Image 1 (cartoon, helix red, strand yellow):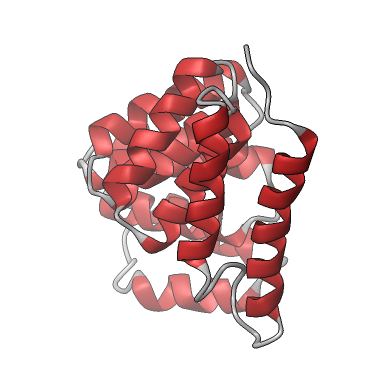
Image 2 (cartoon, rainbow, N blue to C red):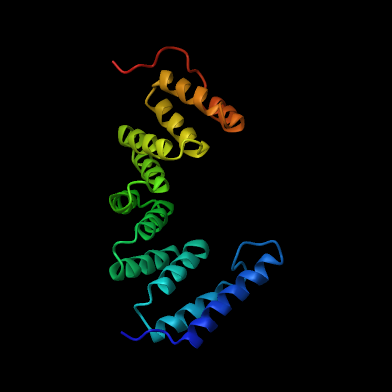
Length: 206
């Protein structure tokens, strides 16, 4: 398999770094306003080696950030066809699917990520959100609980878990989340309390 010559690779990375640097000087996110330049550099790399996984993934990241998102899906899928054992890439594919409201596909991708790396908390978190979007509330609870156990100080996971319990009318569990969350993130706690009114009653499942 042909590999990219070091000079070409250096030029590609240089273009990406220049794009990121130009954006950073203006207080913007990396590649902001320089996306076309970065995409062109990556596509030039892929002309020389279509199987260069890092270039495929970098291109997918750009498309995920700037669109079109279907091209992000396409590039992540191509990267995974070459390197199917990359849990982070499965997570990234799942994230893009979720932003496209393709939550069944998102769940499949997140599940593959956690099969490869059970400790990848963000994939459990994404799986929980996708399940909840589909109305699979018990499955969402399981995934979000796993995310919270893996990252006990992640307020986002605990907030979303509280909201899912609320949707299930498990107000006792919502209160448990509030009590726990208040121990390290009062701001997220107040937001959860505002978003879960009328929590009187046990709310326990029959």
